[in-house]
Length: 185
Image 1 (spheres, rainbow, N blue to C red):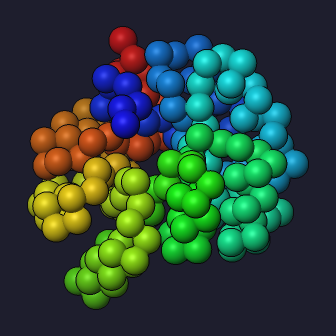
Image 2: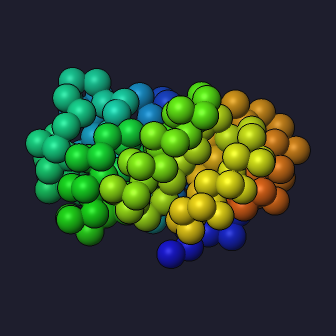
């Protein structure tokens, strides 16, 4: 599955940022910091512009992040995919045919090893590795799991993006508006 030829998956935290990305060449948009009452309209607006939403299920205000919430999101909101740190959410997304993106925070060796166990259990379509500024860890996770990697978190420069891609990341998720604008040229 290919999102587009650009190395960036833009992440938006506000309607203003969303509106900018709706008029860009990016097909997929990661939605962060949303409110449950806004979701249906946001997904519909994106679809009207030929865009698809990857919804960060852990960051929805007003909705508990569990399997029941994932069922609701899949059936009622119908984004293109769900991003979550929770195994149950990833399982439901896969069962419902959505793109399932397992987000993992790699803070230390223990977190890395626990993440491998979680990834083996969930078998997501993609893994989002945070922070995304660790090329050697991106390379290791990609090699060990065989699952495509998104690098996210603390990506601040074009060099950070290039390093993540060269290490094996398929895409870089970022809310940095300068980087989003840079890569859509």
